[in-house]
Image 1: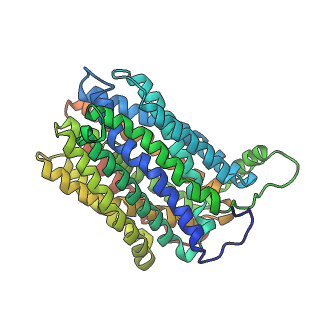
Image 2: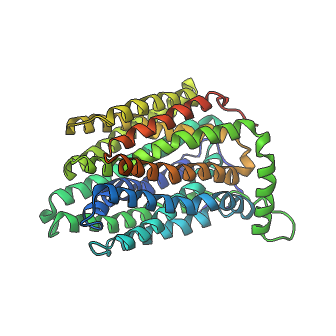
Image 3: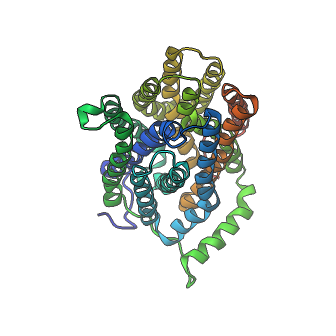
Length: 423
């Protein structure tokens, strides 16, 4: 295991790949659970006898509850990781929370939507909290000239790893008898246990070979007190980091739309009456298109600038949401899945690396705390708004049009952000 404080070699391949493999590890949760089987089982198994609008509304509030926990704690967690040199230890704690919550979902009986919601919140908090610390390590595993490409590599591996596991789970759900399951629901529940094991196993490379950055704590005060003091000082100074503040506001708007599409797309398709098998296969398409696309976007950002790459993605999302409000046939859902796969990872990867170029490296944990704060506050609004529009207007189709405003507004603010320079 590498120790804290070792200098970062610009081309330490093992360190870069070990860092990127955490995306391979936890993207299994994002794909199999967050976007795939949980929304389906939540509606068809844990919310038996209620309308699609009610189930979607409950799912929206469940997602919002998980995001709230991270949103209110993210800046402090990031500052604490910086001051105490505890990025990896805190990441391990959150990953353990996520792994246990995911595994226990397999034991929740049908109709018990409240227990399913509570365990899902636990698992999602583990996923989101781990990502906060994982993102902050980007600036410590590669030189600035490589951040776009390395960020894209992480998302690319996430799509590939999540897609491969999801493929296996889909085959088991569609052909349960071949794997010894009595029905597809039993196979889908077993997928939660498999996902938890995958997440735990493939987290090991990061824990073993990515070094812990040196702590920046000083004096005799405990690290948590120093973290609070530093957080207060940064909050006072944040308005002076104008590019950072502008980016965070733009990011809050457009990532709200991206996250809502990820979390609610399967539930939306189910509400329109599409077959479960069609929705599962569409999500599979996103994963395998997303793998090469995310890697390509990393190199595209290095060539044309991260901001222009993000604009390409936001343009595609605007088309997708407008089209999605009027779809009638399964082939349209598949076509939209391909479009999303082409840009979803790219928008996320380039947002992360563009932000890394705007912040002071020695405060990466703290500043990525604000980054994750905005992302999670976005999730507080998007999924509930998505569900409320369907409930208010009596038709889930209206939900998609509400997201277009977020992409347009975020894109307009992004124009005020320089394409990467330290403040």
